[in-house]
Amino acid sequence: MLQFDENTAKLLETAYQGADVSRRRRMALDALHLAAGEVVVDIGCGNGFLTQEIARAVGPSGRVIGVDPSVDMRAPAQARCAAFPSVSIEDGTADALPLQDGAAHKAVAVQVLEYLNDIPAAMREAHRVLLPAGRFVAVDTGFGTLDWFSEDEARMRRVQAAWDHHYEEARVAALWPALCRDAGFSAIEIEPFTFCDVTLRPDGIALMGLHLMSRYASENGHTPEKDTQAWFDEQIRLASEGRFFFSLTYYRMSAVKR
Ligand SMILES: C[S@@+](CC[C@H](N)C(=O)[O-])C[C@H]1O[C@@H](n2cnc3c(N)ncnc32)[C@H](O)[C@@H]1O
Image 1 (cartoon, rainbow, N blue to C red):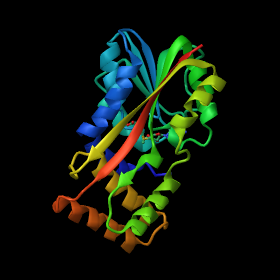
Image 2: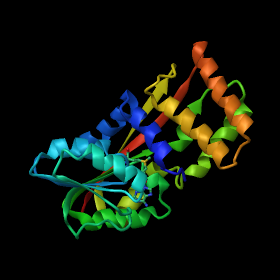
Image 3: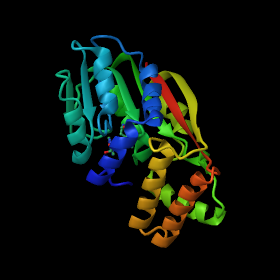
Protein backbone atom coordinates (compact mmCIF):
# COMPACT_ATOMS: atom_id res chain seq x y z
CA MET A 1 0.00 0.00 0.00
CA LEU A 2 1.03 3.59 -0.59
CA GLN A 3 2.33 5.31 2.49
CA PHE A 4 -0.05 8.22 3.10
CA ASP A 5 2.76 10.20 4.69
CA GLU A 6 3.39 13.93 4.85
CA ASN A 7 4.76 14.19 1.28
CA THR A 8 1.86 12.24 -0.20
CA ALA A 9 -0.54 14.40 1.77
CA LYS A 10 0.98 17.56 0.16
CA LEU A 11 0.74 16.18 -3.38
CA LEU A 12 -2.85 15.10 -2.82
CA GLU A 13 -3.75 18.50 -1.38
CA THR A 14 -3.14 20.19 -4.77
CA ALA A 15 -4.84 17.55 -6.88
CA TYR A 16 -7.81 17.39 -4.51
CA GLN A 17 -8.67 20.99 -5.30
CA GLY A 18 -8.66 20.17 -9.02
CA ALA A 19 -11.63 19.47 -11.28
CA ASP A 20 -11.21 15.68 -11.47
CA VAL A 21 -11.04 14.88 -7.77
CA SER A 22 -13.81 17.42 -7.11
CA ARG A 23 -15.97 15.52 -9.60
CA ARG A 24 -15.19 12.26 -7.83
CA ARG A 25 -16.30 13.75 -4.51
CA ARG A 26 -19.43 15.17 -6.15
CA MET A 27 -20.36 11.67 -7.33
CA ALA A 28 -20.27 10.49 -3.71
CA LEU A 29 -22.12 13.56 -2.40
CA ASP A 30 -24.94 13.18 -4.93
CA ALA A 31 -25.54 9.54 -3.97
CA LEU A 32 -25.61 10.37 -0.25
CA HIS A 33 -28.77 12.51 -0.65
CA LEU A 34 -27.82 14.52 2.43
CA ALA A 35 -30.30 16.48 4.55
CA ALA A 36 -29.97 18.94 7.41
CA GLY A 37 -29.35 17.36 10.79
CA GLU A 38 -28.02 14.03 9.52
CA VAL A 39 -25.17 12.12 11.17
CA VAL A 40 -22.59 10.94 8.61
CA VAL A 41 -19.43 8.88 8.97
CA ASP A 42 -16.68 9.49 6.40
CA ILE A 43 -14.68 6.26 6.52
CA GLY A 44 -11.01 6.76 5.52
CA CYS A 45 -11.66 10.52 5.40
CA GLY A 46 -8.09 11.29 4.29
CA ASN A 47 -7.38 15.01 4.06
CA GLY A 48 -10.98 15.92 4.85
CA PHE A 49 -12.20 17.62 1.66
CA LEU A 50 -15.33 15.47 1.47
CA THR A 51 -15.80 15.62 5.25
CA GLN A 52 -15.98 19.42 5.01
CA GLU A 53 -18.43 19.30 2.11
CA ILE A 54 -20.67 16.89 4.03
CA ALA A 55 -20.54 19.21 7.05
CA ARG A 56 -21.82 22.09 4.90
CA ALA A 57 -24.63 19.90 3.53
CA VAL A 58 -25.91 18.63 6.90
CA GLY A 59 -25.53 22.05 8.55
CA PRO A 60 -24.81 22.91 12.18
CA SER A 61 -27.54 20.55 13.47
CA GLY A 62 -25.84 17.60 11.76
CA ARG A 63 -22.74 15.71 12.78
CA VAL A 64 -19.85 14.37 10.70
CA ILE A 65 -17.32 11.88 11.98
CA GLY A 66 -14.22 11.54 9.80
CA VAL A 67 -12.30 8.37 10.59
CA ASP A 68 -8.76 7.60 9.40
CA PRO A 69 -5.88 5.52 10.83
CA SER A 70 -3.20 7.85 9.41
CA VAL A 71 -2.12 10.76 11.59
CA ASP A 72 -0.62 12.46 8.48
CA MET A 73 -4.07 12.50 6.90
CA ARG A 74 -6.02 13.32 10.05
CA ALA A 75 -3.90 16.45 10.68
CA PRO A 76 -4.90 18.26 7.42
CA ALA A 77 -8.47 16.96 7.82
CA GLN A 78 -8.64 18.48 11.30
CA ALA A 79 -7.24 21.79 10.03
CA ARG A 80 -9.65 21.88 7.08
CA CYS A 81 -12.71 21.14 9.21
CA ALA A 82 -11.72 23.35 12.16
CA ALA A 83 -14.41 25.91 11.33
CA PHE A 84 -17.13 23.24 11.62
CA PRO A 85 -17.98 22.37 15.24
CA SER A 86 -20.18 19.57 13.86
CA VAL A 87 -17.09 17.67 12.62
CA SER A 88 -14.85 15.38 14.63
CA ILE A 89 -11.85 13.66 13.05
CA GLU A 90 -11.06 10.42 14.80
CA ASP A 91 -8.51 7.65 14.77
CA GLY A 92 -9.98 4.37 13.63
CA THR A 93 -10.25 1.82 10.87
CA ALA A 94 -13.05 0.74 8.57
CA ASP A 95 -13.50 -2.51 10.49
CA ALA A 96 -13.54 -0.81 13.93
CA LEU A 97 -15.37 2.51 13.66
CA PRO A 98 -15.56 4.70 16.77
CA LEU A 99 -19.37 4.87 16.63
CA GLN A 100 -22.22 3.23 18.55
CA ASP A 101 -24.59 0.80 16.81
CA GLY A 102 -27.15 2.61 14.66
CA ALA A 103 -25.57 6.03 15.23
CA ALA A 104 -25.41 7.28 11.62
CA HIS A 105 -27.88 8.09 8.85
CA LYS A 106 -25.20 7.76 6.15
CA ALA A 107 -21.74 6.27 5.69
CA VAL A 108 -19.31 6.98 2.90
CA ALA A 109 -15.93 5.56 1.87
CA VAL A 110 -14.20 7.14 -1.13
CA GLN A 111 -11.21 5.21 -2.45
CA VAL A 112 -10.86 3.24 0.75
CA LEU A 113 -12.36 -0.25 0.26
CA GLU A 114 -9.83 -1.03 -2.48
CA TYR A 115 -7.02 -0.71 0.11
CA LEU A 116 -8.53 -3.02 2.72
CA ASN A 117 -7.54 -6.64 3.18
CA ASP A 118 -10.90 -7.51 4.73
CA ILE A 119 -13.67 -5.67 2.85
CA PRO A 120 -16.47 -7.88 4.24
CA ALA A 121 -15.48 -6.78 7.77
CA ALA A 122 -15.73 -3.13 6.68
CA MET A 123 -19.15 -3.78 5.12
CA ARG A 124 -20.41 -5.38 8.35
CA GLU A 125 -19.05 -2.46 10.34
CA ALA A 126 -20.72 0.13 8.10
CA HIS A 127 -23.95 -1.84 8.48
CA ARG A 128 -23.56 -1.89 12.28
CA VAL A 129 -23.13 1.87 12.66
CA LEU A 130 -26.00 2.78 10.32
CA LEU A 131 -29.61 3.31 11.33
CA PRO A 132 -32.19 1.07 9.63
CA ALA A 133 -32.59 2.31 6.02
CA GLY A 134 -29.26 4.14 6.39
CA ARG A 135 -27.31 4.57 3.18
CA PHE A 136 -23.75 3.45 2.45
CA VAL A 137 -21.92 5.01 -0.52
CA ALA A 138 -18.50 3.94 -1.78
CA VAL A 139 -16.35 5.11 -4.68
CA ASP A 140 -13.53 2.89 -5.89
CA THR A 141 -11.15 2.68 -8.81
CA GLY A 142 -11.63 0.28 -11.70
CA PHE A 143 -7.93 -0.54 -11.78
CA GLY A 144 -8.44 -2.91 -14.72
CA THR A 145 -9.85 -0.05 -16.82
CA LEU A 146 -6.65 2.02 -16.99
CA ASP A 147 -5.81 2.77 -20.62
CA TRP A 148 -2.70 4.96 -20.79
CA PHE A 149 -0.88 5.52 -24.09
CA SER A 150 2.85 4.91 -24.25
CA GLU A 151 5.15 4.27 -27.19
CA ASP A 152 6.85 1.62 -25.06
CA GLU A 153 4.01 -0.73 -24.20
CA ALA A 154 6.21 -3.21 -22.35
CA ARG A 155 7.48 -0.47 -20.03
CA MET A 156 3.93 0.84 -19.54
CA ARG A 157 2.88 -2.68 -18.49
CA ARG A 158 5.83 -2.88 -16.04
CA VAL A 159 4.90 0.43 -14.39
CA GLN A 160 1.25 -0.65 -14.23
CA ALA A 161 2.20 -4.05 -12.77
CA ALA A 162 4.24 -2.27 -10.09
CA TRP A 163 1.23 -0.05 -9.27
CA ASP A 164 -0.93 -3.17 -8.92
CA HIS A 165 1.00 -3.91 -5.70
CA HIS A 166 -0.29 -0.76 -3.99
CA TYR A 167 -3.91 -1.81 -3.60
CA GLU A 168 -5.55 -4.92 -2.20
CA GLU A 169 -8.62 -5.32 -4.41
CA ALA A 170 -8.96 -4.25 -8.07
CA ARG A 171 -12.59 -5.36 -8.45
CA VAL A 172 -14.54 -3.72 -5.62
CA ALA A 173 -17.40 -2.83 -8.00
CA ALA A 174 -17.68 -6.37 -9.35
CA LEU A 175 -17.82 -7.68 -5.78
CA TRP A 176 -20.23 -4.97 -4.56
CA PRO A 177 -23.51 -6.90 -5.08
CA ALA A 178 -22.25 -9.93 -3.14
CA LEU A 179 -20.57 -7.79 -0.46
CA CYS A 180 -23.83 -5.88 0.08
CA ARG A 181 -26.03 -8.95 0.13
CA ASP A 182 -23.76 -10.72 2.65
CA ALA A 183 -23.60 -7.68 4.97
CA GLY A 184 -27.35 -7.04 4.96
CA PHE A 185 -27.71 -4.20 2.45
CA SER A 186 -30.30 -3.87 -0.32
CA ALA A 187 -31.16 -1.30 -3.05
CA ILE A 188 -27.76 -1.96 -4.57
CA GLU A 189 -26.62 0.44 -7.30
CA ILE A 190 -23.40 0.93 -9.25
CA GLU A 191 -22.57 3.75 -11.64
CA PRO A 192 -19.31 4.01 -13.60
CA PHE A 193 -17.72 7.37 -14.42
CA THR A 194 -14.64 7.91 -16.53
CA PHE A 195 -11.81 10.42 -16.64
CA CYS A 196 -10.51 10.57 -20.20
CA ASP A 197 -7.81 13.15 -20.92
CA VAL A 198 -5.86 14.20 -23.99
CA THR A 199 -3.86 16.80 -22.06
CA LEU A 200 -1.85 16.44 -18.87
CA ARG A 201 -3.69 19.07 -16.82
CA PRO A 202 -1.79 20.36 -13.77
CA ASP A 203 -4.88 19.83 -11.60
CA GLY A 204 -5.85 16.48 -13.11
CA ILE A 205 -6.03 12.91 -11.93
CA ALA A 206 -3.55 11.83 -14.66
CA LEU A 207 -0.77 14.07 -13.34
CA MET A 208 -1.45 12.85 -9.80
CA GLY A 209 -1.25 9.27 -11.11
CA LEU A 210 2.00 10.01 -12.96
CA HIS A 211 3.65 11.24 -9.75
CA LEU A 212 2.21 8.60 -7.43
CA MET A 213 2.82 5.64 -9.77
CA SER A 214 6.42 6.53 -10.57
CA ARG A 215 7.20 7.29 -6.94
CA TYR A 216 5.59 4.09 -5.70
CA ALA A 217 7.32 1.89 -8.31
CA SER A 218 10.83 3.13 -7.56
CA GLU A 219 10.47 3.52 -3.77
CA ASN A 220 9.23 -0.03 -3.42
CA GLY A 221 11.80 -1.52 -5.79
CA HIS A 222 9.19 -2.95 -8.18
CA THR A 223 10.84 -1.38 -11.24
CA PRO A 224 14.29 0.21 -11.69
CA GLU A 225 14.20 3.96 -11.05
CA LYS A 226 15.57 4.65 -14.54
CA ASP A 227 12.61 2.74 -16.06
CA THR A 228 9.98 4.75 -14.20
CA GLN A 229 11.84 8.03 -14.79
CA ALA A 230 11.90 7.26 -18.54
CA TRP A 231 8.14 6.55 -18.42
CA PHE A 232 7.52 9.78 -16.50
CA ASP A 233 9.61 11.80 -18.99
CA GLU A 234 7.88 10.14 -21.94
CA GLN A 235 4.45 11.18 -20.65
CA ILE A 236 5.58 14.80 -20.24
CA ARG A 237 6.97 14.70 -23.79
CA LEU A 238 3.83 13.09 -25.27
CA ALA A 239 1.74 15.79 -23.60
CA SER A 240 3.97 18.56 -25.00
CA GLU A 241 3.63 17.00 -28.49
CA GLY A 242 -0.17 16.77 -28.26
CA ARG A 243 -0.12 12.95 -28.23
CA PHE A 244 -1.23 12.30 -24.65
CA PHE A 245 -4.05 9.86 -23.83
CA PHE A 246 -5.26 8.67 -20.42
CA SER A 247 -8.51 6.97 -19.48
CA LEU A 248 -9.60 5.52 -16.13
CA THR A 249 -13.03 4.51 -14.90
CA TYR A 250 -14.20 4.76 -11.29
CA TYR A 251 -17.32 3.22 -9.81
CA ARG A 252 -19.79 4.87 -7.48
CA MET A 253 -21.65 2.28 -5.45
CA SER A 254 -24.50 2.62 -3.01
CA ALA A 255 -26.77 0.44 -0.91
CA VAL A 256 -29.27 0.76 1.93
CA LYS A 257 -29.28 -1.07 5.29
CA ARG A 258 -32.06 -3.65 5.39
C1 LIG B 1 -6.87 7.31 -1.32
S1 LIG B 1 -7.12 7.89 0.30
C2 LIG B 1 -8.77 8.48 0.18
C3 LIG B 1 -9.07 9.54 1.19
C4 LIG B 1 -10.46 10.18 1.09
N1 LIG B 1 -11.51 9.24 1.32
C5 LIG B 1 -10.65 10.88 -0.22
O1 LIG B 1 -11.34 10.40 -1.10
O2 LIG B 1 -10.07 11.93 -0.38
C6 LIG B 1 -7.29 6.41 1.27
C7 LIG B 1 -7.46 6.69 2.74
O3 LIG B 1 -7.79 5.46 3.42
C8 LIG B 1 -7.13 5.48 4.66
N2 LIG B 1 -7.06 4.09 5.18
C9 LIG B 1 -6.08 3.20 5.03
N3 LIG B 1 -6.37 2.05 5.67
C10 LIG B 1 -7.60 2.24 6.24
C11 LIG B 1 -8.45 1.44 7.05
N4 LIG B 1 -8.11 0.20 7.39
N5 LIG B 1 -9.61 1.96 7.47
C12 LIG B 1 -9.97 3.23 7.12
N6 LIG B 1 -9.20 4.03 6.35
C13 LIG B 1 -8.03 3.54 5.92
C14 LIG B 1 -5.79 6.10 4.36
O4 LIG B 1 -5.13 6.57 5.52
C15 LIG B 1 -6.20 7.22 3.41
O5 LIG B 1 -6.50 8.41 4.10
